[in-house]
Amino acid sequence: MRLGEVPMDGSGWWDALLGTGTPSSLHTTVLWEVRIPRALTALAAGVLLGWLGMLLQTWFRNPLAGPGVLGITSGGSLGVALAVLTGVTMPTWIAASAGCLVVLLMIAGAAKRFASPVTTLVFGLMVSYAVGSAVTLLQASASAESLQTFTFWGMGTFGKSTMWQAGSMVALVLICALWLVRRSGWLDTWTLGEDMARTMGVPQAQFQGELLLLSGVVVGWVTSLCGPLAFLGLATPHVHRFFSKARSHRAMMGGVAMWGGILGLLADGVVRVTDAVASHWPLNAVLALFGAPVVLAVLWKRTHDWS
Amino acid sequence: MNLNAVNLVVGHSRTNALLGPLTHVWKAGGMHLLLGGNGAGKSTLLRTLANALPAQSGDISMSNDDQGIRPEDRSTWTKSIAFVSSRPPHQVGLTVEEVWALSGHPEEVRAWHPDLMDLAKSRLSELSDGQAQQVMVARAMLQSNRWLVLDEPTAFLDVQAQRRLWSMLDVHVERGGGVLMATHDLWGVERWSQAQSEATLAKGSLALIRGGEIHELPLHSSKEDLSELLATG
Figure 1 (cartoon, rainbow over the protein chains, first blue to last red):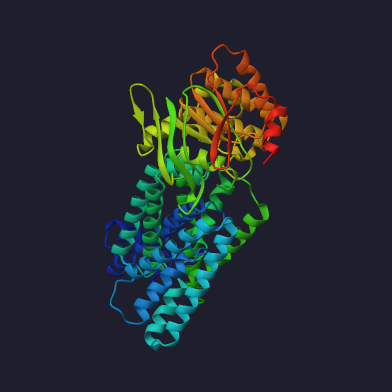
Figure 2 (figure 1 turned 45 degrees about the vertical axis):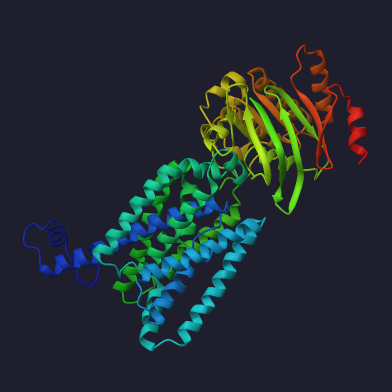
């Protein structure tokens, strides 16, 4: 919080935070309008994407499922690209959520057909490529200014949100937490397989409908505010599984939230350190540096109890 | 409660009916066995009865003299009929206790199968197929004290595990429940059939599914008779 272009010493920071003493107005502004929203956003995005990775991995019974791998994030990108590059006046989060929902519906429909979870992943990757090329086509015909906006958005950042937007992310965390607590039994039952879940009384249509809506809104919201973030959703549940034995969803949600928050803040910390030395690493590059090794470790270990 | 099927047609889609229309009553209590070749529609029938698949047409219900239950009443139906598939679920990180807790109080298992309690803290994924299948039968007993529906539960088990599973089902029948099971285990069927002939009041039944229909077989069938019957297409 003290690190950044405006230097703050220990007492200046506390004064600005608590409003005690005589804080400089610059410090107060920087802290409350830049750094606190940024930290909250990083924290909340980490928690939300971590949970979403956990949900998608349970839903598709696939340890390598995540919003990025299944093409859901790129659906959000296409939504944002349509809104930003073609100049349609639409809030980006609605565009992003709509894009995510469309891809999710496609994946959920396709997953029924495919016996192997690997095929579902490959399908998600193909959707991802197809959507990516649609985005590229849009970029080719976009104005230079909107193109630049879109390119910076695509690199990902936690640093663009206002206090209100950061607050909305925190609210979304609370909504997700309530849903997870309420549906943890259904989620646990789902890990036994679709057939078992149905015979054990899980109303499949309602359950999948809720999952679909929640995932679409969460990925859409996070993607519109922070850009298409890679790996955070996929890797976070595995970091939890590495350190903890808990596998029931109610027991996992705390650990996944903690690691998601830590990874979000840590990644943003790296970005801000490189900003301070003026080399400006994009967030997505940092996340891939963290995330890719985690995925490789999962493949390497081939754990038989990932769920 | 009796389990009733009336003009029931089962299959994966309306155009691809596997079995039916069939009308049959499985009487409450006792062990009811279904035989039949691969692809005869046994699995689909059992999965439809347990609500894993929708019926293509016709009617399923449970009834006794006082009341009736229908699958549309999901929560009551779920408490009255539980399913065990031929393979225990894979890659499940939940502990045995957590799996049981999804369907009832894990402590109840102690009264039925005390030695299974040793597995309570293990993860399902760490167990052998035989152990995991026993855990799934105990789970089904927690879910339903009426009907257990099992689809070739011993298909992937060794002889010892097969015997254990059959004797687990006896416990369910002793507490008044009904068992409806598809099986290829002729050795087990013969043993069961001998026990039926010794019992004073036999409640079970033996049936063959073939050509889209269900045929009752005599209770006292030997392994040789049955394999002869199944071998002639």
